[in-house]
Image (cartoon, rainbow, N blue to C red):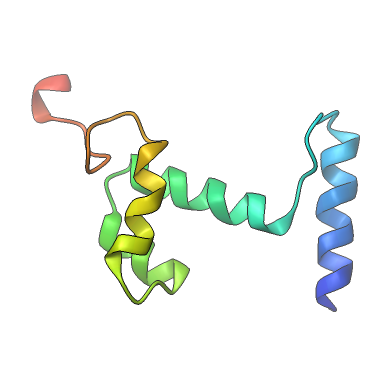
Length: 77
């Protein structure tokens, strides 16, 4: 499948879902990264996204509101 077909399908799905902002494949990448970081998987996120430096992965942590590493404290359970 050509990448433009995937991009078009994501855009159309976002529009069909009634999203007000444009949906892109990169939007899905960001969402995927945020969910992984919320689960406390910084190293796995770095590997899956292909970041050579963990500092690139850490850029996403400003969105995660569970501390600097995106990990829940055991006391929060």
